[in-house]
Image (cartoon, rainbow, N blue to C red):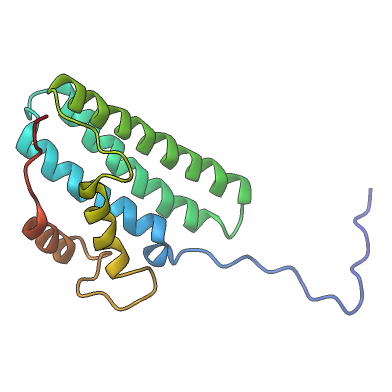
Length: 157
């Protein structure tokens, strides 16, 4: 069957823009989650445990799949959506691992209105996406140095 004749006056189809994932808020947050998870696991979870490995891999997968989905978006919305869903599932798995850790160590999980949770969110609101940041959060070395200054140990119930 012959393909339909092009519509005169219509522009040829172009690929959608892709990449630029380092400016996506989701990628930036996933980078912070990955760095925090590596630091947390190195400090509080035995490096020989499967949990350490699983948590770091889940955190890494979140950011990597966002980046890969962004790059694939030029040619396939379906692939982009699939990869974003993989990222979401990886980060959900990581959240469950953190909840398990808290429960197994008799630590309290913060509600969204707890002062500790508000303090963490306030840090993110000081530098909303798209504004100049004191640290380039897409630069893992600079971000790691900035994150290292703000780490604290978990508190028991």
